[in-house]
Length: 401
Length: 139
Image 1 (cartoon, rainbow over the protein chains, first blue to last red):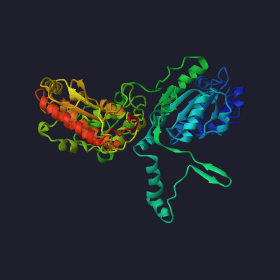
Image 2: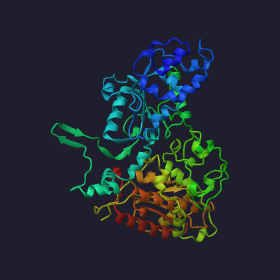
Image 3: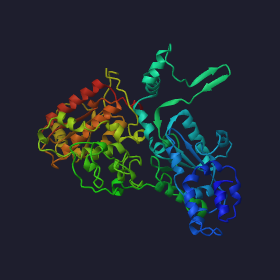
Image 4: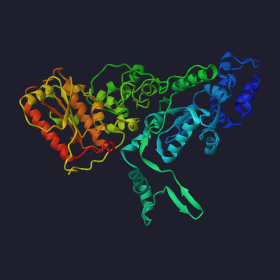
């Protein structure tokens, strides 16, 4: 008996026929820990569902459960976990969807997806960037089988942290990882030639292959058509709630979905609007890291000299990082008014340095010295959006004639 | 590269000094290469780094930003802001792998037609030495 069935039985509700379908159990294991204590306390009258619980357990949608897939490309797995971090709302998800494919949570095979009709999956959340041939193949397959394709999380939407690999290329990465790191270096010394994974190996028993790692990491919409975007690293509960709310309303009440291309759960203001810290618009002369100073809990981090990507980042997350004393890293991406998150951050930051009295006489070197305080601006300003920036990847000067 | 390489250069000129300087160079019939396209902006600080990056992304071989001399800005401090931004932007371009010389910031006043001419000539020569933009999509 699954977790949901137990709850329903305890609450005296007749278990809907949809609950018997076999595809759900793996997912229901996970929320057990999070959701169980709350439910234990809630039911005073076991005969009927409390109104809150009834709202959470609407039963299967009129047309039967919708099919749902959640897949990861180049990702850390945080987005998958975020889906399980939505507290009691997971109950509604359990009632509403039939998980056909979700490698981290449910047992499903690629062949199961291949066997589906085109567009049979109602919703696919694709998290992670597209970085190798397998990611790309799966993305295309899921796009074909899905009605709604959502770029879920910063990596799918913007390229995310894996996008920073665009500052280098496959050859350099493999070289470094397999021959130059100290641990591998010692091993490689004992080899006649460097041992680097091959994408194809012809064994007597048959060919063995590995996905091909691409030079350029791409966001999901750079390889296929995406319907909606959900930002965040990972998307916050608040953002997921907006996504689920829209979906539930659509599935149960037939409400229209938001227009295609909507960034769901995010606003068009910048994070600063949402951040409760007090802004004094101070000028800064020194850039610091949070651990170097005693961070004032009330004052804007930028005012304190900490580089915070708030001014260049979309609001919607509720500013959990800045409230915890850590600068925003920009995972919600740029606002719709700009294309370049890094460039807006660069502008905002450079303007914070005050015009000095001797500015008219300052040489170029002095200006460079001031700005050199910003270490690794590319990595800092484009931490999540490198793959979607205008330049997109590093280049190599070939030299003139 | 090829001997016929003619760089594409975007020149952002501030309305109050450099654009007038460029005008002056034209009126005085000063000879200079024709590889540049001027975009007139109200102030050098109006040039968002995004504009520069977009120019590079669309295949510009070099970008030059011309503003009023320090202490001469029509808006008092615009050029000071601009040079901080451009310095920082140059680091970013360097990290991308561009030669930072592809982005130049220079001060040209309204009366300096000749300086406009030499700045452009020198910049075109620098870019010719550097060769076409390393951006693959552009080539």
